[in-house]
Amino acid sequence: MALSDPTRRAIFEALPQAPRAVGELAEITGVTSSAVSQHLRVLRAARLVMMRPEGNRRLYSLDPRGLGDARDYLDQFWPSALAAYSAALQTARAEGTA
Image (cartoon, rainbow, N blue to C red; front, top):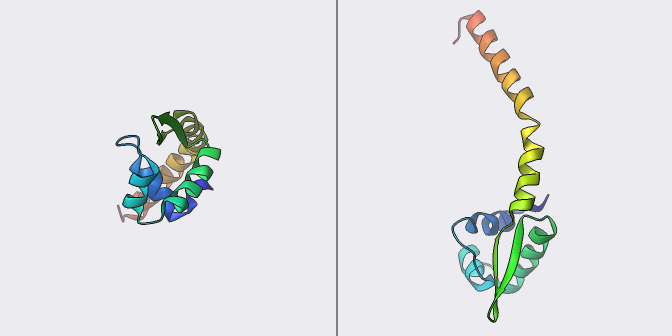
């Protein structure tokens, strides 16, 4: 998964505030610009990040298409997670521990 790497997560988490250039992301994450570029390639391939040129720079921001896909995927787990939580609460109440 694209976000399994801690550096990629740090890059991803730096983007909701504002679009950022590779150099800014390198400063934030403490890795080289070359390493940031490689991580951004993975994030772009996963459609979690998009790039737009601005002058001689490339600015990266979160990609709403990939985020929507991720949300749709995770939403399928909510009903079963909530049902399991409800069952655990009922069991705890029945045992007198809640």
